[in-house]
Length: 170
Image (cartoon, rainbow, N blue to C red; front, side):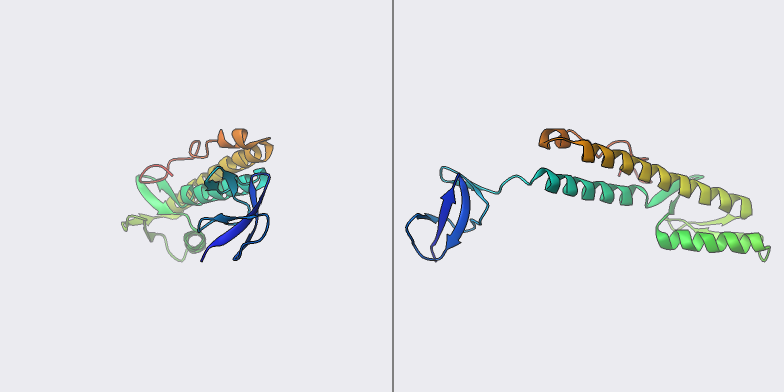
């Protein structure tokens, strides 16, 4: 079915299924808001605020990935909320004196035995790693918020400055 659009200022403003004065035939897939350049219809650039929101979402995804594991004494340990909660429980159990050691499964599925001191050191390493990831995200958030235009926003490199994740990269 052929569609028709009213175009003002080089932008598709309205689409209708039948011809009407001031409307021109358009190809399938054209939607209101598209920019018209001759016979080419392209999606408009997002507003600066939309682009900032999308970049911040990408930063949060990187932060989540970067903070998901920490290296400690040659092993990768998960640092998601469930793992941190379990680690807190294990620390409490060791601190109570009920046990002197706990076997902990690493992200690589290796059993590592920890005493209270080594489990505390693991906990501190994980907390520091997560804090570094959140600090990097805060710096990027400030850069995103301060970007005055699309060019400045495009110049922000969200792929650098993260701590290295086990297995390499973020």
